[in-house]
Length: 546
Image (cartoon, rainbow, N blue to C red):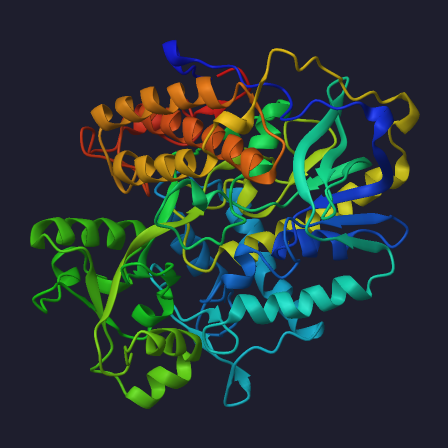
């Protein structure tokens, strides 16, 4: 375990201080926080006798899962093998994958895809069979997709319909996770704010975090506004171990239109043969990697950054003009529609792209069953660090991971809940004095949030240097020391506290790992250091108080 040094700031245990006697109390067997693919799968996998509450920050349709374009990776074709998929995953993971977890997820993937089809997910077909796409880092076509480039939306449609039909599952949408509740070293539920502004103590025998990632820590991101790392930060405050937060995967191709929101341009375009060109039309990827545009995301992202620096241009361009235009529009209808709104014809025109923060590979430490280091708390999906992805996630492995671990956790957590749990009447929620805290009125939340996200892009982006990380650590430490003294009473304030917490931990992780591996590249330490930083060798692990 490592410490953060002299700028160490211990976070408050809770974001708000409350009187539990004045709150509404709800009781359930299993509390699931998060309505993406991992959360819905966990809820659906809970045993029928278990009462389940599924809490979502926004509408249940709003999650990173719903925005996923590419698809789900699984060995479906007879030309492919489980061993091929395992080796591709290990190669992408840069030596940090846990082999037993990789084997588990890859072997379970085809069954999970089949289960999705059974509940009504309509995947794309070719000659009556599942159409299989090819993406970067994959040696064989194995990407199952839906509606061309809207796989996440179709999968989540089917899963959400199933959740609403489940008689033992109650969905609480537009409900914000403020803090996890602990007692005598065990998680026993959560404090949430409902959509009507009431604070509720949700007592649960078992709690599952599936709350997604923290892409909004960076200005340039593919993530929706809900991805502010609330689950990771709440787990950190509750005493959970977190690890590998230096590994934020930047997606290489995000539509770059000045002044517009960032829109993901799927990996599948390059899988289908699209080229990357610089501002002068030069195709640069064959100079970088023998796989060219189909190299893994870390390699392509760094190549784009180097090219932008070399050409002094704010983006590069994705070119599909050499492919059949009708095929391009039919295969990628969603991307075609969005690009058309900006006057770009993907079958003919160059698409301006640049990398953006996409997927947090690190997260809450779990074992191969999804258990965290805090009894009573489980984690699945992007919020968790299971060991599947290592130092760099292979494209389209994330939805599969959410399905597999959501399934495992739902069954195990509900079984333990039905065996018994803590007696709610004996569980106090600490009521702490707030006299020493400052009101949030004198703090410009929007300005500080924007400043933080800009700093993370500038100093903690795709290419990092120790001097930049030192500067970022100092600045974020100052912001934490000032901002976290305030008593926030709004979601914007709680999100800022979570963003600051995650940013501080990401910078600490990036400083500690003095090597370059996977998505983490240090220009001052460009080589691998297997002796110090190989798998399970001094892997940074973080507890409250760092």
